[in-house]
Length: 120
Image 1 (cartoon, rainbow, N blue to C red):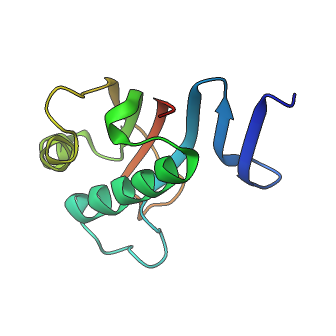
Image 2: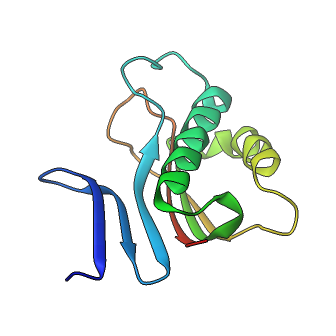
């Protein structure tokens, strides 16, 4: 298993897993306790900033995202979330993407994303 690298690991998960030329991030959200009153726009911005930081740490960046799964507490937030997403993703670098409505781990969370990216 020496070709698998895990970072920020606890009993349940690793925030970053690198294998071969790929990096996998666990589900990222806004900070639930401190951002409980934030709307979908603020939560999406904070979450994507966390993705940026983890991808940088792993040796990748948002332009190298291959696949993303987006989870919305309320599908009615789709347009507002997309406005943030579309300003975050550079033209010509849009990954394969799925968006679903889902119950998230905390009532205050409105958005979560998981990504798979290529290493730089």
